[in-house]
Length: 310
View 1: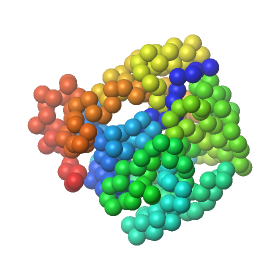
View 2: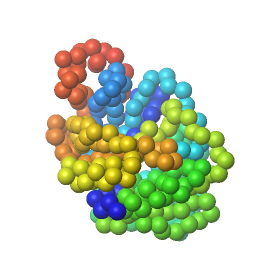
View 3: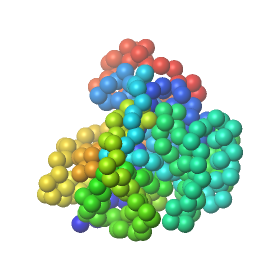
């Protein structure tokens, strides 16, 4: 069993409009844009990162806004819901704020004793705010979101699968322990990691397969402390038969990827070196940062990228 995984690192999704995406996460949800860079494989497309003050692993939602990309089709074989943690008692504030902002899909519920507020993102993304203990986390209070209501980081994520057995086995191998089941959803939790420590598997037998597009999660990343831990995880996955990529330098973390039995793309990302490696903490996310190989083409890339606003 793998012992190096510390919970979630980040979740990466796709969007249709960069400015709308930026406004939703910074203005509506009050997160901080901690990095403005580009897709390493398509430099004419932004890679935008939103999170807490420093982009702590377990707090960062990232997006590839692919211009006029059509919406994805919800279904099985994907991360169906991305869950953010908010302080206990904060859902009333968020219900009013999101309704006032015209956010769609608001729905209140409870799962395993935790109060939840579901809502949709600009591209039909499925999100939930879950009331949780702070557990040492501090919210970024942008856009007039008060400290006692701000988003603390991720709570976890819910995957929708036709058959969850093989993915459940994989999570157990990755160090997650089976928690409780409510209906078709079973929770898995990792001990001793960060506070973004839950994964829910929802079995939807016979459900249509998801098709990726705007509003879809591209991949979900799990945190390890450093490159040595990542190497151990990679070796263990390869020994178990998974097809794992070589280590890829993503400037702010090192990454490896593999496809799960349920169809979801997993990443294992290092907590090092962090988002302050090329920007002062006070100015994170303001300047366009480019991978070294694209720096000679900066002028052309800047001409291709749309304006984001503040």
